[in-house]
Structures are given as C-alpha cells and as structure tokens.
Image 1 (cartoon, rainbow, N blue to C red):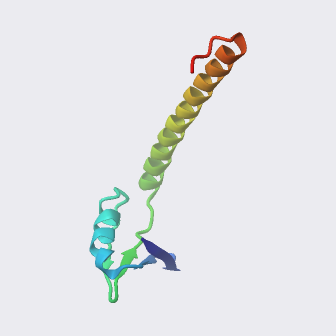
Image 2 (cartoon, helix red, strand yellow; image 1 turned 180 degrees about the horizontal axis):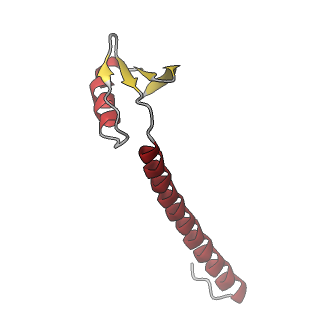
Image 3 (spheres, rainbow, N blue to C red; image 1 turned 90 degrees about the vertical axis):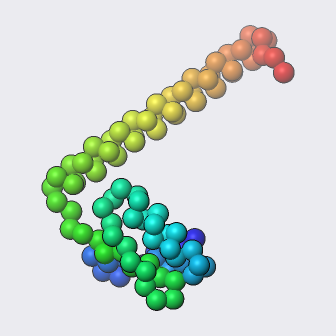
Length: 97
C-alpha cells in the first residue's frame, strides 16, 4: 500500500502507491493505538511525527508485546498438538479420509 521512509528518528514518511488511499492510510496509522498523529503531505504522502518514548510508554509496549508473544506461543502449541494427534492416529491406522 505504501513505502515507509524513516527520514529522521522523529519523523517517518509513508509514500502511498495510490495517492487516493492516503487518507485511509492516515486513519489506519492514527487508529493503531500507538499514539501517532499523522498528517497528509503533498502528493499522496503521509507524514508521521514520532514522539519520544517515555519510560511509562516503553513499559506498556513491552507488556503488550509480551502478551502478544504468549498468545502466539499458545497458538503454536495448539497447532503442534493437533498435528501430533493426527500423526498418532495415522500410525495406529485410525485416520479417516
């Protein structure tokens, strides 16, 4: 949808391939929950000022990422468990289909 260019540590520019999608990209970045306030630039660009991260925000992001990682691990465990059960049924000759 867009090319991301990090212009400086406090500024990112999203160059939309289709300029008509710039408003939707801006809204998606704003609604991402990361406390960004993007603005429409010229020619289909979305300028995203990146605020300095406070210690409280850093801790909150780390906590959120930890939860996401745990959910991913649980999904992998469940997929692995179901695959192992299917293999076991195949070895026992009880696999249907």
